[in-house]
Image 1 (cartoon, helix red, strand yellow):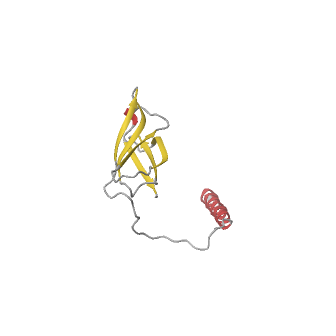
Image 2 (cartoon, helix red, strand yellow; image 1 turned 90 degrees about the horizontal axis):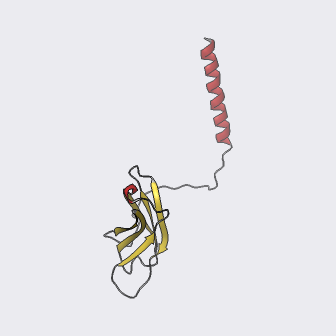
Image 3 (tube, one colour; image 1 turned 45 degrees about the vertical axis):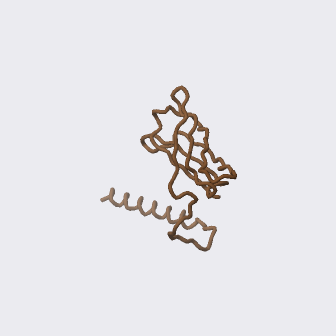
Length: 130
């Protein structure tokens, strides 16, 4: 019975401490909003990508089929991931250049660090803007 009382007191003490800590938190904004909606994007058919390697390491990624002029001046960045989905390299942000034609753009971003090609199983592309 003593053990139950001790554990019960420990639980009450722990809960009291967590409530006291929670009570000291302050929120910087009076409002908070959530919702869903369409996020506009500059490219409706997606991008292509290919890897540039040197001595078995991925040193860069060429991203192609970037809509022109809709995506120009946007910031492109990417993350390379391993089989577990963990980041092994990143690149960018790099601004998509503005040109005078209507032909889809292509650009190469250097990766850092430069992982072994066998470690790369996925790529996450992100274009912010324009």
